[in-house]
Structures are given as structure tokens and as C-alpha cells.
Length: 119
Image (cartoon, rainbow, N blue to C red; front, side, top):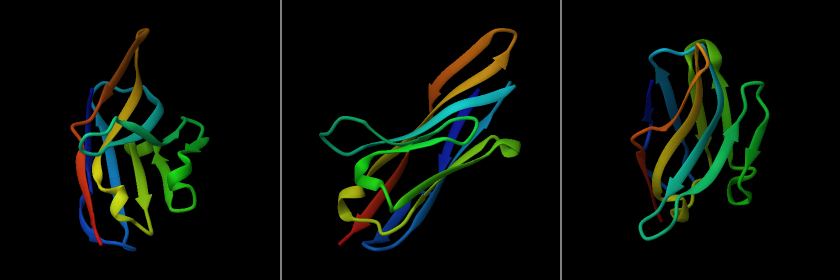
């Protein structure tokens, strides 16, 4: 299984970006998917997560600004980020639990995508 993030970039404060996390490989279903971020010198932190059924959970610092969604047919999870702030600058990673069938589960990370918000 491979997880690939995309959609990062440089944006001005107040702007928007949409990140994608696409899974490929042997996949029967994707269970929980989380978006995390890590700024320089800081610990990696949870931003948002979504279950297979669509239940979501957000960190307080992004509530009302970010939205996580998923397209199960495309094995892809999205993070719509609005009203971006300079403090949102970080490398964003997705983490997914994938049911590969035959009682096999994959739990892994993508390579990350850089988000930079200028003031």
C-alpha cells in the first residue's frame, strides 16, 4: 500500500488549499484516515481524522476552517483548508489504516506535503 499526499504549496494568509491523500495498492477498504502536521521544531500533531463511515474529528485549532472528506470509490481523503494562517505552516502528512483483506492490515504514513502560509 502506498499513500501519496498532494496539494500543498505557498498561499497568503486568508487563502485556501485542498490537500489530497490517495491510497493505492492492495486495498479492500480504508478505515480511519488522519491528517497530521509537523512544523519545524515541533511535534507532529493531529489536525483531523475521518472514519470509514464518515465520522470526523478536528483539532480545536482548525475547527470551522478545515474540512476533511473522503471518496471511498477513489481511495482518497481530502483536507480543505480555508482561512489559512501563518501558524498553519507545516508539513502535512496523512496516516491511514488499510484493510488489505486476508486478515492483513496496513498502517502507514505518506511522505508529506509542505504548506506555507505567508503573512
